[in-house]
Amino acid sequence: MMEEWKLTRIRPDPRNKELFDDLEREDFDALVDSIRDVGQISPIMVTPTGLIICGHQRYRALKKAGVKIVNVVIESVLDSDEKAIDALRIEEQLRRRVLSPAQYVRTIRRWWDLQEFREGAHGNRLIVRQFADQEGYTPGHIYQLKRIADLVPAFMAMYDEKQLPHMMAYHLAQLPAEDQEALIDVVRDQLGALTVAAVRDHRKQVEEHAAEVERLTIERDMLKQQLDAGPIEDARIVEIEERLEDIQREKAREIAKLTRHIEEQDASIETLTAHAQSLEGALAQQQRALSFKANDRIHKWLSHADGVSLVNPVEYANAIKDDPMLHMFVRQHIDAARVIISWVTRYLACLETEAEEPDNVRRLPS
Image (cartoon, rainbow, N blue to C red):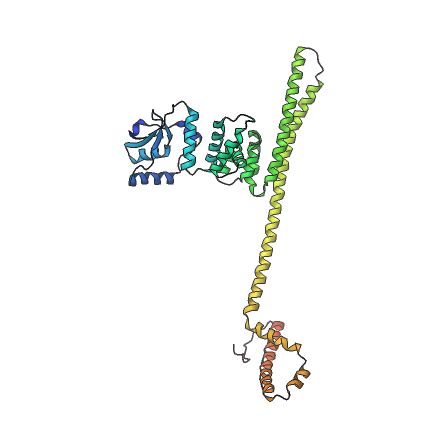
C-alpha cells in the first residue's frame, strides 16, 4: 500500500552501501532534473519506522530537489531483521537497477549467504538453478560470480572497470588475500600477456602449498604439546620449521616464475605484432600492385600485345594473304605496334639512364 509521508520521516540505511554504491554525479543530476520536471515516479520502500529498504538514490535526489512530501511503500519488517531487508533489497535492485560488475558480484554473494545452504542438501541445486534462470545465467556462472566477490579491493576495482577478464578474476579470487596482494603489480603491469591458464596453474600450486602448510602446522603443534608434556626428540619439529620456510621460498619462486611467463608472453606478443605489421605491409604493397595492374592502360595494352607471341607469324601471314580486307586491318595494327615498340624502347632507355625527357611519341587513343 502506498502512502504519502514527509521526507523527514524516512532515513537511509548505512548498510545499503555494503552492496550498492551511490549513482555517479551525472546520473544523479539527471535523476534530480527528472524529479523537478515530472515529479517522483516510483515510491520508496521503507520499514514501518521509515528505514529505507530500496530507494536511497531517489531519497537523495528528492532531498536535493527540495521535495517535502514523498510516496512510500511500507513493508512489514523489523529494522533489526537484516536478512529480510537484504532479501527485499536484492530482489528490488536486481529487478530495477543496472549494477556495476563489482556491485553485481557483491549482490550475488549476499543472495547466496541469505540462502543458508546446508551442505549436501537436495534442494540447493534447484534454488541456484531457479535463480540462475531468473538472471539469465547458468548455475556454474552464478557460483563463479559468488567466488569473484572474494577479490581484494585492487583486483575488484580492475574487475569493475572490465580490465580483468571474468575467468581470470574467478581464479585470482580463490587465492588467499595475501597471495592476491603479492600478484597485484604483476597482473596490473602485464595484464595483456597474462593467460587464464597461467593464473589457474598458480592457484593450484598455492592451494597445494596451503594444504601442506596446514598439515605440517598441525603436526608441529602436536609435537610441541608432546614436548611440553615430557622429553621428546625435537628433530622433527626442526624439520617441519625448515619445510615451512622452504614453502615460503617456493611461493616466491612461483611468483617469479609467473612473472617470467608473463614477460615471455609479452615478448611473443611483440614478435607476433611485428610479424603481423610486416604481413600487413606486404599485403598493402601487393594490393597496390594489383590495383595498378588493373587500372593502368599501358599495362593492359602490353598484356594484350603479349598474346601475339603465341601465334606463328609465318603461319598467320599464309592464313590471311588471300583476305585483302583482313590484311589491311592487320597492317593498321602493325603501324600501331611500331609506335608501341618505339614507346617501349624509350621507356627502357629511361630506366637504364634514369633520365627524364619529354614524351613526343604519338599516344594511342584511349
